[in-house]
Length: 399
Image 1 (cartoon, rainbow, N blue to C red):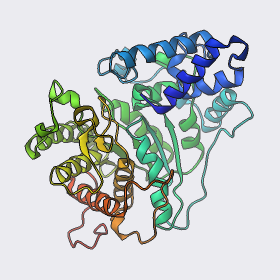
Image 2 (cartoon, rainbow, N blue to C red; image 1 turned 180 degrees about the vertical axis):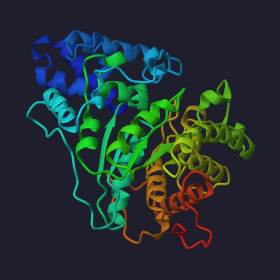
Image 3 (tube, rainbow, N blue to C red; image 1 turned 180 degrees about the horizontal axis):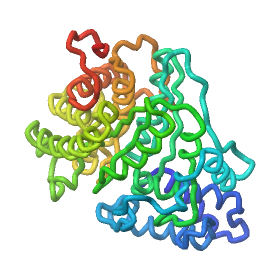
Image 4 (cartoon, helix red, strand yellow; image 1 turned 45 degrees about the vertical axis):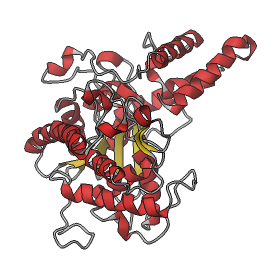
C-alpha cells in the first residue's frame, strides 16, 4: 500500500469523527486525481461516501495482508481484441482537440500541454506511466541526472498498483472501456503537442504487447525517432508459492531461478514488440539489478543493509519491505541508477558530483551508494535488451 494511501486513510478517519470538518470539494478533487479507482460509479466526481468506502476497502486489504490495488487476476475489456479502438477514443482526435479535451477536465488551474525546450545538454525529454514499483526510480532519476550535470525533463502519469499499468492509463487517457466517456488525456495532450525523445513504462501482471503498442503507435505518429523503455520490475515472493521460514532459503541458485523467470517473462514481451518496432524497444533491467544486489547481500557486500526481505527476516534495512515486493530503504537509488545507465549509456560510477538525494539520510552511506552504481552498470551492460554495450569497459556505451 502506498504511503499516500495511508495519508488518505488518516484524513478520512478524522473527517468521519468530526463531520463538521468534512473534506472540501477541492480536497475531494485532489484525492480523485491521486486515487481514480475510488470513483466507484465512474462519474468523474468523488463523494465523501465513495472516499470512505475506498478507505474501508484499503483497510480490509491491509487486514488480509495483501495489496487490493495490485490484483494478479482481473477482467480486461473485450475491446482490446478489436483492430481499432472505439471512435470516441481521444487518440483519434487532432492534437488541438486532444489538448482541448484535457483542458476541459483540469480547468484553468494548469496548462493542458507540458513541454520542454530542447536541452543543450542532450538530455532526453521523457514521458512515462507507472506504479509504485516505478515511483522510486522516477523520484531519484532526476536527482542523479542533476549531479551528472543536467536537468532531466520528465513528465509522467502514474497510479498505484493496477491504476499505473500501461493498459489502465491508455483506457483512462482515452476515455474508453472502463473509463468510457470520461477521458483524462494527461500524456496524450502533451505527446501530441510537444517534443519528446523517449517513453518509459512500469510492467504489470498479465501484460500483453498491445498494451504497449498502442502507446508506441501514438508516439511514433508525432515523433518518429522516439524510443521506448520497459522496466522488468524484480522477483516477488508470490513466485515461491509460500513464504520461506527464514532468509537462509535465499541462495544464489534460488535468486537466479526467480530472476530468470522475470527476465524470460519480460524479454518475451519486449521481443514481440522489438520485432514489430526494430531498434525502438528496450528493457530497464531493474530485476537483474535487484538479483545482483541480493546475491551481494548474501556475501555481506552491501554495507549497512541488514537483510534480504523484511517480511521474512524482520529487518527494516532490507532489499524488499513488504509482501508485494516494494523496495526497502535506500534501494530507490539503485533503481534510479538503472534508469540513468540505460537511458544515457553511462556508468553512474563516472558521476563525480555528490547526488543530493531527497529526503537526506545517513543511509545509504557512500560505500553502499558506490556499490549501487556498480550493480546498476553491471545489470544494464549485462542485459541483451538494454541497448547498452560496454565491450571496452570504459563505463560508456560503445558507439
